[in-house]
Structures are given as structure tokens and as C-alpha cells.
Image 1: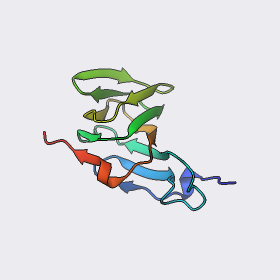
Image 2: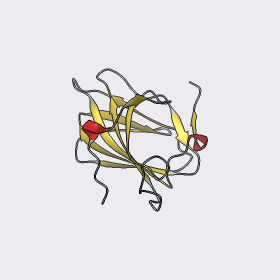
Image 3: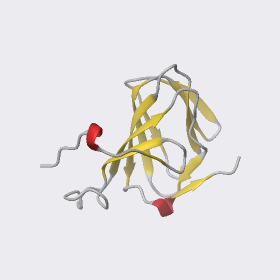
Image 4: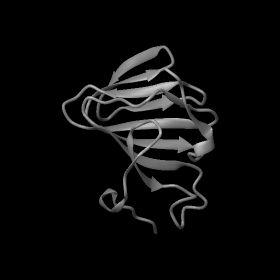
Length: 124
């Protein structure tokens, strides 16, 4: 049995400028080797947004836990709030902005699992 606690999981600022804690990743968490996705807890502080980026071959899902924001995928943008899930197709330029007075917090599920070689920043 694997149980992870966000309070015990280190956070780091990642390429897209979000603050990420890897909860489950087959390459990083012992015992998760057969998992076909990765799951991270992400935060975007008040007044910030992630940088435009894309995953070339993986699908992403963002499940909003706290805060309000605006999700951008390609030329589309929509407000997002807790309880919503967003599907981000592979190859889509995307970023999310925090429009709230608190952190925007969401789960980021990537299938197949996130790999650094699959992600790229999009020049602005």
C-alpha cells in the first residue's frame, strides 16, 4: 500500500513556474513502477500564472482544488474553479493564471507519466 501526504512531499518551482510536489510518479516514488500516469500537486501563487508550455505526447488533466483562475489552451480560454477538471490534449499550448486572492491549487495528472523530455516552453 502506498499512501503519500502532501505535507511530507517536497515542493519545487518547475519549468512552467508552478510550484509542484510529485505525489505519485513511477520513476520517482518507490513501488509505483506499474503506474501508467503521474500525479502532482500544483500551486500557482496569487497574481501569478504558469508560462506557456506543452507536452508533446502526453495528455494532462488539471483537477482544481482551491482558488479561481483562467485556463488557456491554444486560442481558447475559460474561467476555472474548484471541482472542475480540465482535459489538455497532447501538443496543446497551455497555461493557467491565478485570478484569486489565494493560491490556485490543483492536481496535475499526466498520462503517460510526465517526462522532462516531453515538455517544452513556448516562446512568448
